[in-house]
Amino acid sequence: MTNHIFMKASEFELIIEPGRTEKNYWTDLWRYRELFYILSWRDLKVRYKQTVVGVAWSVVRPLLTMIIFTLVFGRLAKMHSIGDAPYPIMVFAGLLPWYFFSNSLSEASNSLIGNTNLISKVYFPRLIIPASSIITSFVDFLISFVLMLILMVYYQFVPSWHMIFMPLFLIVAFGASFGFGLWLTTMNVKYRDFRYIIPFIVQFGLYISPVGFSSSIVPEKWRLLYSLNPMVGVIDGFRWSIIGDAATIYWPGFLASLGVIVFLMWYSIRHFRKMEKAFADYI
Image (cartoon, rainbow, N blue to C red):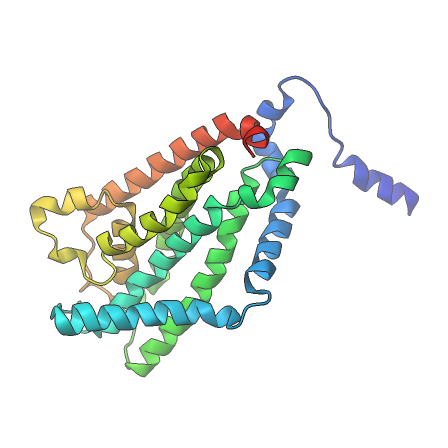
C-alpha cells in the first residue's frame, strides 16, 4: 500500500528548472486534466446551489426570449420563417448557439478573478480556468436543446437529417466562445472596469446577430461584411442542421466567420500566454 502511494505521488513530481514551464506548458495541460474536471464540476455545483429555480433558469430565459422575439419580429414586424419551419423553431435554433456563446463569455470573463487564491498560490496552466468555466455553459446548452426537442413535438416539426452535422457547428461555437472569452478574461484581469462592458457587448451582440431573423434578409452586397460577426456562420449552421436545405448556408460568409474565429483563438491564446506570468500580480 505504501509503495503504491509513493508511485502515485512520483507521477506528479514537480521539477523546478529554468524554462521548464514554457517548454512543457502544453504537456502540463494534459497532466493537470483532473484539475480541469474538478473546476468544471465545482462551477456547476456553485451555479445551481441555493438558487430558487435552479436548472429551470436554463429553460425559462431562452423560452421567454423566444416568445418576445416571436411577438416582435414574427407578429409585429411580419418577418417570415425559413421554409416550413414555425417561426418559434427558427428563433430557438438561433438562440441555442447564441446563449451558449453569451453564457460562455460571462463565465470565462470572470473565471480568473473568481479563482484569485488558487492562482496566487499554486502552479498550473492558467488556461485550464477559463476552459473549465465554459463547461457550465455547455450543460445549459444541453438543457436548452431538450426544450428544443419538446418544441418540435409541440409544433409537430420533423427536423432535417442534417442534425447529424450539428456537433461540427457546436465545435465552431465552442471555438468562438473560447477565443473571445479568453480575450475578455485577460482584459478583465488587467482592467477591472471591463466587467461593466461585458454585459453591454453580450446585449448588443444579440441584436446584431441573426437570432430573431434570418441572415438572408441582409442585402447580398453586405452579407460578407455582416458575416465577419463570428456568430453569423454558427447560427446559420445550426439552422441548416435543424431546418434543412431551406436554411441555406452562405458559404463565403461561413468561411469568413470561421476565419475570424480561428484568428481570434490564435490571438487570444497568444495574448493570454503573454500575460499569464503577471496574472498573480494583477490579481
